[in-house]
Length: 220
Ligand code: ZN
Image 1 (tube, rainbow, N blue to C red):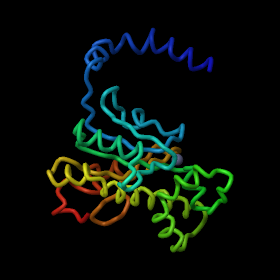
Image 2 (cartoon, helix red, strand yellow):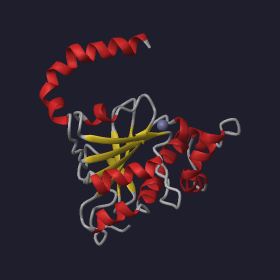
Image 3 (cartoon, rainbow, N blue to C red):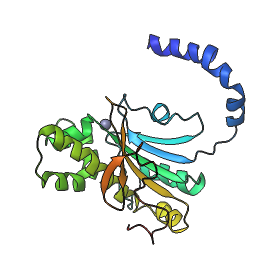
Image 4 (cartoon, rainbow, N blue to C red):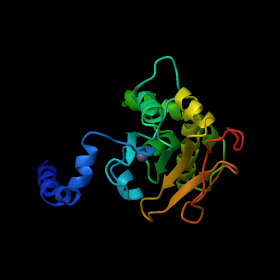
């Protein structure tokens, strides 16, 4: 805890004074352009990864960067998606998985989670990706995990499409959905190309999009 308190003091004496105008502007308003959904993993820092300032990213983080499908008992993730899309009017949603993900490792290796009932229940939202990944052959456990991470990003994007706010905004041409995978060791980011269902280098293909805002042009 000592490091955190020292961090607060450093923020107040060094970082904050450099952005006083920004924080004054942000004190009564926010207009983030992007909803960024990623894992709770301590090594994945959305603002650092995308080099964004305070006020620019609306963020949801949980174990496994999961978005439950919309249902009769919507939870915190659904409420936050709805607020970001219907109230804040974000123009883009990114679901970002990552290398060495503990949640995806547990699924990929079919680890017994009986002693972690809440985790086991939560990860059921990745069941469709699990079934697909288990049905494939993989060169190694590492390849299997890598594939699971990507399959899960694709599955969570599909779940996102069940949310009425998302569907409405896409139909109005106001929302693009992106599926990314961040590699912790190299800093590389791969993005899902919705036209080919393949992950490609985002730096080499910066226009890559999973689901464009017009459902007519990209298959939902
Ligand atoms: Zn993770």
